[in-house]
Length: 360
Image 1 (cartoon, helix red, strand yellow):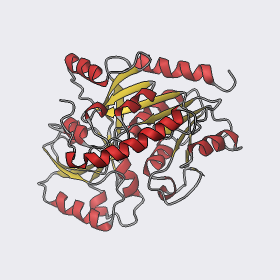
Image 2: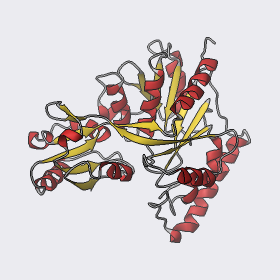
Image 3: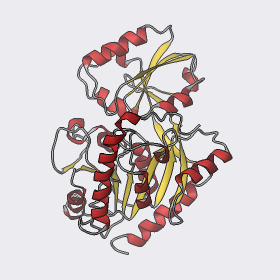
Image 4: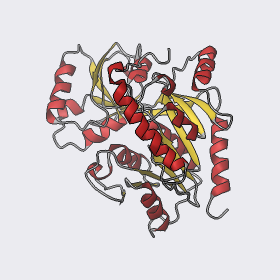
């Protein structure tokens, strides 16, 4: 049931109150116009959350890219979390992962025809994308993880909340994992409950809708993970999960919340052993040694499954042993909008885009 993973530290409530007051006052300064938020003459769609940890932002950004890039010139702008560069960087297919961060690098590799840029100053990043000769034909800008970046007023603000950790049942940092009060959700045009089980009951939909208590102007959607065919990291062989169902699996991930992924894979293989690293973890030789040791504990036949996000960092390592790489299979993660609302969602997004193109 939703909310089952929520663990809070009630003894940190006084610190959470202080942190909550700081974020409340900051939001008030934007609401009162003391701190300025800029609008731009181009469709800007923000995808973000108010929770520390993964809510599935990258799969949802990729969902929007697939929806829009066939007809429009799309750019994705993020801050480039944990990158080793500074300022504005426009990615090319040869840009090292360390310069733009793992998620931006993954998106550029999967979608080479779109623009991918990083800049902690989102206003500056948008202005560079619109003005620079190399990117001035951009028609849509997708902001990755920008819900708290209030210096930009996006035309569409999409808020994600994890089915297993709904924002309305969580607490503010450090008592819980919220970056601000759940009331911040009112800035969203669309709210998506992510990582839902595929067999979610109608009653559960209604309970969640009532729990979130959205405004009439806000649209609520539910999404679930869908998985593609697996790719072997060593020889690029492609297979379905069914073809590998007799294998014993070591599932290792460095993502925010792998709970739903584990649930989805249960029963798909002979056995599954979980090995978790922190979100955005950069792997070391000792990490790979641990992976190898855990893999060797499994009976034959055996393999390793990881995510695309983790694979991007593994592929950039010079020290990835062949003995490990040949066992690693990458599982692509996409999203599906539930309740047959994918068409409605697409119509809402494309209608906004068409009405706000620079030449419209």
